[in-house]
Length: 393
Picture (spheres, rainbow, N blue to C red):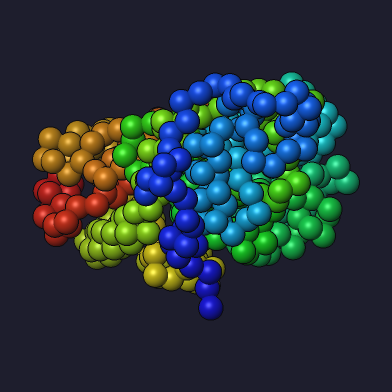
């Protein structure tokens, strides 16, 4: 029986300070102590249930962390102020100068830039591979490999990572497998499939309203304690704390995530199936034509579908821009970056969210200049959306 992330969230009992059905929002940066030795022990991380300073922990972020950890079935989680903060803090906690990382060449542009341009300044080597080619991953291993990093469903080409097999490769080499599950919350449960760490941009599907930026790191108690160490914890010392009000808002939105993901998936499946019938070049894991369709079926929590992300290759940048403008004018959605919103969003990936990747690398990885990435919304009348899209092509 597959893990049920929605039930895990719903089983949490989190009440407000005065019995409110929603946890109280703690609008404080610092916290009082009755005894000096309690403050010292809390500062050293030895005290459970005590809060010292909101960059360290605060109750609102702890409530959200507990809920995200429950959803991922990990021992613990840490909340950050952005998805990039989650990715960078986790990788920097795992790696030091002289270490090596293997990663998918197909990945979010900001992540690519961090791995390609920033980490080498600190003598951390990164090898970029086709993450769906397990032999290529194995061949990239080095004695100093510390992390294999991938996205469950890669951005923007929607390749599906074989998480169990990647975990075997990583663990066989004494490395960790770190998975960004931003595109597929609830659909995949990476920790249940062998991942050591799961990271999110909660800005996207988890929050679902595009009204804030936030991230999360899910893992063991030991790793989260390392992240939050006052002496050498990256999440502590780099300071990417999320505001408690935003944390509280995300927690409430998290409780509708299962409903939203099902609708995102149903709508995307409908559009992908019909647009492929029209002869368009569609990339969507729910189609049998997708190279990793069977892997996705095997690994997924089936009731949540194949996700709300799809891509359409329109061949040229000029055609992509023209079609996107027409779709926005027709009311299909918005010409905008990001994803997971209740309205459909579309953008030309090579010239927006993947623009940090050099053009020659984009070509090598198969990213067409006319690839339009869709984050399919929660439309109640998806047939009308299909008619509008067809009129713009």
